[in-house]
Image (cartoon, rainbow over all chains, first blue to last red; front, side):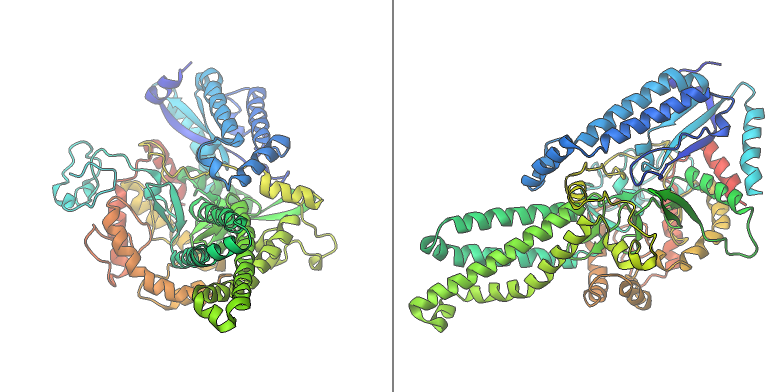
Length: 157
Length: 476
């Protein structure tokens, strides 16, 4: 079954959510783990998912890059006692806009047709990439939501 | 019905509220909420912060010392410009008030930036995230190990070859990123937490550290500047009219000299200390705990340092400024999950159906905050003075100033805020309880708890399915 982004909310019901956690091995810079979550095994190709995460990681690395332009921005801001932030958008904010567009793009093209939805990490405090897995209300939703709840209930039992 | 988004005082809304649009909960009717004006996220922020200008400004709860700082700086500088500068600009050079003016401008700008901006607060986990983490922890620990107390929750990561332990924050329901810490005064996890500074009335963390550093640096220069030129002024005058007459002619100079003399030691000292911290890329928190000191072991080193002083300084001061993660002025979407639960069992979000289930499930979690000393979330502003004293003494802040402020500013803070922010939901017992107009004078915490839960029930709009899933997971 192929869904569009708008249809997803209407006709599909939320089955479960998968969270891709942060990867702190490089320090405090914002990077996400590229490990493929097992719940997505049947929903999306591994390579597509990994590419999405790697691209996002690349964006965040670009935003947090310490180099010539960030120094310039920092020194200029300091010289104006940071009043310049009232009227200027920082480099980080510009990259975040790019990220948001990219995620929307990915959702429309790749994830929504597979019944998945990516949430921008910014809305989750940059802690996780939340992937919502939807099931069709009318189709065999009961069986797959049954399996997902059993996998989630197994650990809690 | 007041039209404004929480700006006007709500006088009689609790009587007129029979909303016809949503009948999901019978508990909505006693609640004073307006029909269709969407709330901004700062109004339901779970931490202990104060917001002004409709969410643009964010400060800690206790701001008394911040006002003192402002007054000291403004009065001293004002006296300097009014009484010393005319004489000095005439006698020596008009560059003196000009430079003084620039320094003053810099000090005020950085002070206000430090005090009003988000220090890097980490938003609390959504219920789904929290449940997912709980599940993973349970799997990792192999089901609940005996007894009521769950095992301590830590994760280890290797950063640049150094093993770093990530702790689980019971209040925010997240694993804290490296260098983050939970501020008990503000009840928030803050990224790259340095310390909570009462002088600026805010935490100092990742997002406002550079403002703080520039503030104390420029304040050092300003203090030294004023001190030096006040002395010069008095000396020059004494050469003309004698020392005592000079003091009589400009009494303001005496006051300025005294203030500057006492400030200069602490502020210059603090600037020096933070210069050292920046050059070694450490936070005050890490330095005090000795996290990266050689005394812990030869293998212990700071994994975040870039190796040389110059890069460390540049990274701290001129690096990119990350955005605020809490989106204070955003509107609450009807279908986004609200933030996860109880700090100490009293502040709770949750659908009305799941209230009882979550209440049943959370006793486990409620007992936890009392275990870890840094998760002190019992607010000190009720009539109980015991917790107040213990809360404040544990902080690296001047203890003498804190207890006075908490008891004095407690009630005075509550009253005006209740009148200004009708829709402003404080999520701590001393302020949550009642519709406006009712003073919480000595109301027991349980009473405020039930009122608080009732008033929050209608705000929640968790997606139905995810709520059910959450209830299943949390009712373990």
